[in-house]
Image 1 (tube, rainbow over the protein chains, first blue to last red):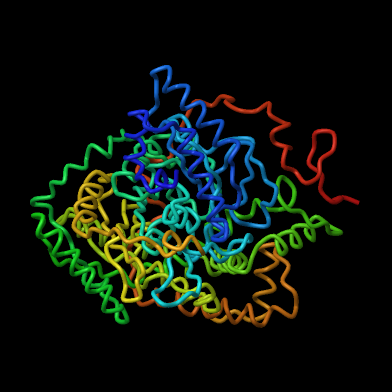
Image 2 (cartoon, chains in turn brown, blue; image 1 turned 120 degrees about the vertical axis):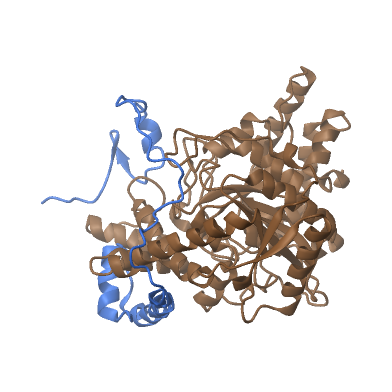
Length: 494
Length: 95
């Protein structure tokens, strides 16, 4: 059965269609892999009974000759998506015990397409982090290890459980959210594919809010094709999210023609940051060569506001978070710590319920929105955001896509960088720009570091040009030929 | 701009997060470091640039003003830590 978990989503779909195995058999194989991967702490909640029920319904539909597009495909869902009747925590103590009475639009669309829920994956608390170490439920460990070094590594974050689950073959596909890089950076760290679509492509309804103008749901998968299949099922206009784009959704898989002749690929000089490791620069150069050999044309471009994107983000995201997280007050849901007055109850509940990083961001956000500082910090950051978006708009007059590294380093050890918030924030230096501008961006595993860890390359496209992003990403993926397996799969030990 | 203990007490009160007296100094230091880092933005000339609040493509859509939801008190109260007779319960706010 273990070979079933090694299949790609597209291969599994073909196997189900040819009746080589049933949805139940496929789901059982993944449930066994999840049990074996428990030492990696991938899931906050496993849902085996739900998974088997859903798989059985898939098999019945197939027997009736009326299968759905994703019928029988077992996926993992970041614990930021509300799932009706299933614990949803955002990896925070303040949501301990929260069982939504409604289903997020994105997950509802996946179930309507026949996907099977394996469980809810671990992440940074309220998606605030780049390592899945700020979770109230403990860190997720990567399936990867450095060569000759047995120290556990982070999976990246915040969608670390989702990315690591795919790398450990404990899910066929997964969904996550990306606010500053939270799909693409863990995808890069774990050697999997992750795409953050355009802002408004996937509904945010029913997703626990972190920073509403920056939160992007999206898929993670083993291959570019798998990610395209998942995004087609997740995307689409939703009247329940006022920022959802009223635009038609293409069949993204059909965009994978392998043909990129004549595409212009922008190479932004400003992404060559001073202390970037030589191996990441070298991989970037390989990426340029691969796309050029396939007929694309590399064009030097300038995105001058790049270095200001991250500080702007660290004003805007905490400001929006401080507002969104005001709802956790001990009255309507989640944790409550009793106090003598209503204010004391709020203060004690929030002090006990929020972890250190969430507290830090809520306080920064409250400060930059407070009277006297709003103009100097918040509006200033929003003006810089407009300039970041303007940089991209100018670049996309000349080029079709932009190629960059996904992250400035491979995965680091659990505990590294945890005592310096700014060092942790710098993980998102290459990814945060596309969040601020709302552009589609994908990370594709492209090579290994000297220590034997995955490194990703990122392609950024014009707003709502996901088809072009997928098309070039598949060419990049084929040229890179990344077929390395993590230590966990070789040894079976975390 | 450095955030001192007095300013942090005020921010913590606004955010309704209790910060113990012993934690104030270290936390004020951490937050000041972050605020010093974001000061880099002052290097950017933004005169005449309109603030960007969102990348959303459509303007806020309007719909007909009619009730589309409701009558779901049980679902609303389902996760409340404390309820009585169909209401949320909070500590006494009036004497």
